Amino acid sequence: MNSPAGTAVIGIGNEFRHDDGVGWAVVALLRERAALRPLPPGTGLAQCDGDPGRLITLWEDSALTIAVDACFPPAAQPGRTHRWCPAPGEWLHPVAAGRQSTHGLGLAEALSLADALGRGPGRLIVYAVEGADRSLGTGLTPAVAAALPHLARCIEEDVRQDGARTRRVGVRPGRPPS
Image (cartoon, rainbow, N blue to C red):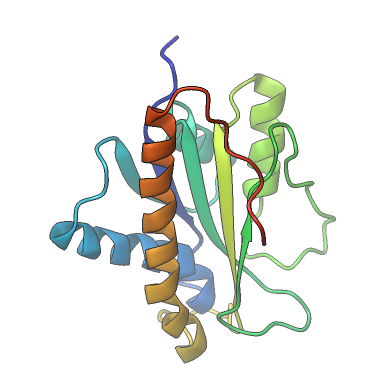
């Protein structure tokens, strides 16, 4: 088995469900920006519908996985972004059947399955962007679209910092402030 290397940036969602497409939109923006300022070698950008098998395949050999997905809490502030860096083995817990998602299964279920199979991601950073509209249709709401440039810069910085961190011997990432 190869040692994990590089970074997988995975935009999760459904571009045909308005704000649920934020993960896909940020990956598209990162691709555009990489044409002007390339990301470190070994950085992969992918879009995924949240299927656990596809997610596991996308992060399998990466030292760092950055997942971006929409969330729809009851009192959402569209565009507000949450960054979560779990400790090893501290994964999201799958939520009950009535959850607020457009995915049948999603990141929490993929992490749980991957952990059981011994195929979890290396280090993980999750960005959850609060959305307003998950009805059928394309295009993000203005507040969510306005969050994209800042989110892309944050992800680029995470990728670059992780590349520098892994080149130093004996440095283990800690839990950054929220």
